[in-house]
Amino acid sequence: MIPSVRPRPATTRSPSRAIPDAARAPTRGATATAAIYRELRADIVEMRRKPGEAIVEKLIADRYGVSRTPVREALLRLADDGLVEIFPQSGTFVSRIPVDALPEAIVIRSALEGSAVRHAARRATGSQIATLRANLVLQQESEAAGDLNAFHEADEVFHGLIAEMAGYPGLWSFAQQVKVQVDRYRRLTLPEPGRVGHVIAEHAAIVDAIADGDAERAEARMSAHLEGLLTSIPHAQGSNPVFFAGSPASTTL
Image 1: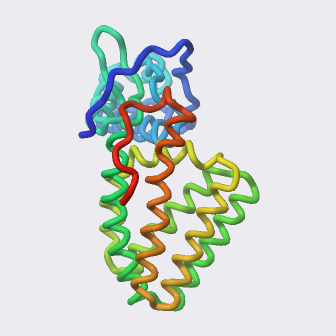
Image 2: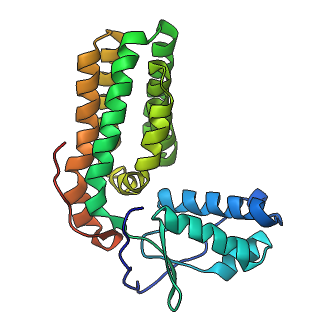
Image 3: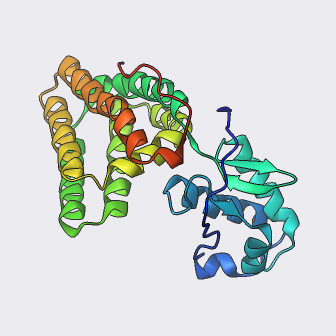
């Protein structure tokens, strides 16, 4: 688990968040815990709940029509994920993004995805490449619409498709496990002018290398793509210092 740092109280907090109607229906036991965990985790990773923000058990329990027990169980799971911090005398807070842990997570992801794209370039079929190109169009449409959530979802699918093409979908599953904190940080970079267009161009270069069957170039393009996440850490932290904890480590792969 990534070490956490106790957040400093913010001057204002907005602990409540809209929860889908299906989630508000009364649930019980393990089902309730799973639903609450899933919704809170998505809110935190997608930055709808900001680092340092308080999480109020009673409000969540009321929305789900359950006691506080499943809420607490869900929060304990989130604490194990490094996404919340629980202080018995102070409350529960969304954890700050541990900036010193980001480089290692990005390096691990780069190793996993470098292997995936190398195999994908050697094995990809014409229909699979067409699917990747269709995904690029979806990314472009999301950019044109200014829909960052849709772009992020298309981006996730893009990387998952490459692992499937490689014949090793588990590589993307492993990458998803280590990149939770990276996803939170990355959400802060997407609104930057030109950022999404730059990412799409990098994705297109990866697809071209796969289509050419050039494993070495595909791996190099993927490495360059992910290195951009590494080198952007200081800027993201400088622009949003209250969301981060710690000091950045090395910014080279």
